[in-house]
Amino acid sequence: MLQVSACYVYLTSPFVLSWRCIEAVSAGCLVVGSATPPVREVVEHGANGLLVDFFDIGGWIDTVSDCLANPEKYSALRDAAQQPAHGLADSSVDSVIFTAIPTRSTRGSMRTMSP
Image (cartoon, helix red, strand yellow):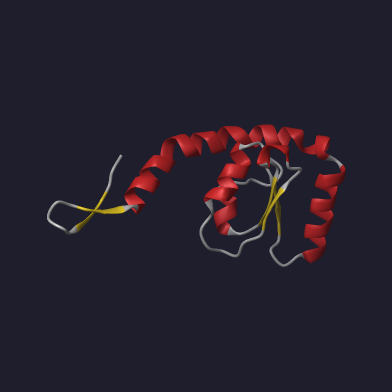
C-alpha cells in the first residue's frame, strides 16, 4: 500500500518517531511530516521528504495538495529517501527491537534480549 501511495502524511507532536514513518520512507513513499525533532531525525526537507510546521494548516493543505497533483515532481525525493531508511533499518532495528523486549531468565528475573 505504501509503495503506491502518493504521499504519507505524518503529523506528530514531539514524541518518538514511529516505525511506520521509517517504513513509509523505505518503501519509497513521499513523507510529508511535521517539522518536529523526531521527524527531522529521518526527514530532511527538500532532500528526502517534506516538512511542514505542525500548526500551519494552510501549509499542510498546500503541500499535500501539490504532492497529490504533481507526483512526478517529487520522484527524486522518494528515491533519495529510500537509501537512508534502508541503512537505518539495517543498522539499528534489530538492536532496538531486541533490547526493547524483556524476557524471563531461567531464574525468573527479567533480562533484556540481545541480537
